[in-house]
Structures are given as structure tokens and as C-alpha cells.
Image 1 (cartoon, helix red, strand yellow):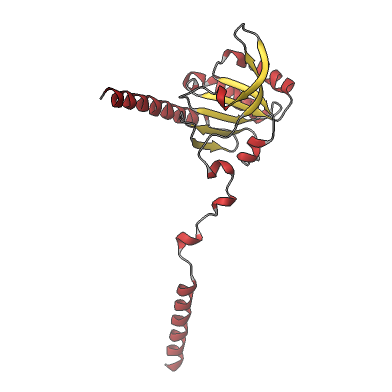
Image 2 (spheres, one colour; image 1 turned 60 degrees about the vertical axis):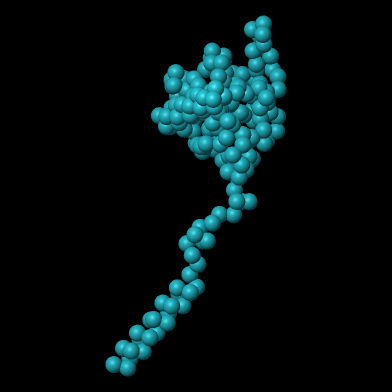
Length: 202
């Protein structure tokens, strides 16, 4: 009987010690924000500086610097970091083309570290000049892959019409999911415009 009582007391003591030493779940699950990639520390669209082929007013293609200032206003922005030689990137491009009717409200920024000539060949292969909502360019620095901590291509990041981060895809997006997301962001933009008009007329 004494042995059973002693064993019970020891178990109770160990349990109490465990409970005292155990940290609360919420403090253990807290993430050090300084260790997160830049795109998760800020909601703002990153700095974009690309050497891209832009169609001039006379219809000719001219390689120039494309920056955030060249982005359209009030449109969701989709940044895609890609390699012209990547099979998955080519598959993603084909899927985007197939779904362009439902993705036309977004503006796509294709960023690469490859030479401008390789990017131009990629554009020619997929005849991307017919899409006014796309730009392809070589990044002047290595800022984008560091900002997003990119490990695979294609990497995709979606921003809303106010240029605020919404979602990212580490190895390309499922087109059905992307279609739904762009549709949602486009609807939010229309609602926001209507509410602003009501506010002005009051």
C-alpha cells in the first residue's frame, strides 16, 4: 500500500513539474518576423526594374526600362519569376494563354534573370505581343528573387488593385484557383469604385 501511495505521489509531482515548465502554445508558435522573406514583412508591391520590349506609339518594339510607374492603375498585378528554358514555366505560359479570357483583368509582369534575347525568343514562341496585359523583361538586379526568397520557377505572386500582397505560389498556380482569385479581386475593385462614387455624390 505504501508503495502504491509513493508511486502516486511521484507521478503527481512529475505532472505538476511538466505543467509548470510547459510554455503556452501561442508563445511557442510565434514567428520571428525579422526572419521572414521581405514579401511577408510588407504588403507593398516590390520595386520593379526591368529591361523590357515595349511597343512604341508608332507600333515598333523598343527595349526600355520598365518600372512600377509603368504599371496600370486599378488592376490586380501578377508577378511571375520565370526562366525561358524552364519546362514548367512554358507549361504555365500555355495555361495562362488558355485562360486569358478570365485573366484579362490582371496585368502580368514576367521577370527573368536571363538575357533579353532569350526572353524575346520566349515571347515570340508564345506570340505574347497580342496580349496588352503582359510585359516580359530582364531584371536589372537580383532584387525580385531575394525579395520573394524564390527557390523554384515559375514563382507567382498576386497583388490586388491597390498593389497590396494577396497570395503567392512557389511552383506556379493552379489555373482554376488563379481564375477565381483574379475574378474576386476584379469584383472588389468594381465595388470599391462604386462606393467611392456614392461617397462623392453625397
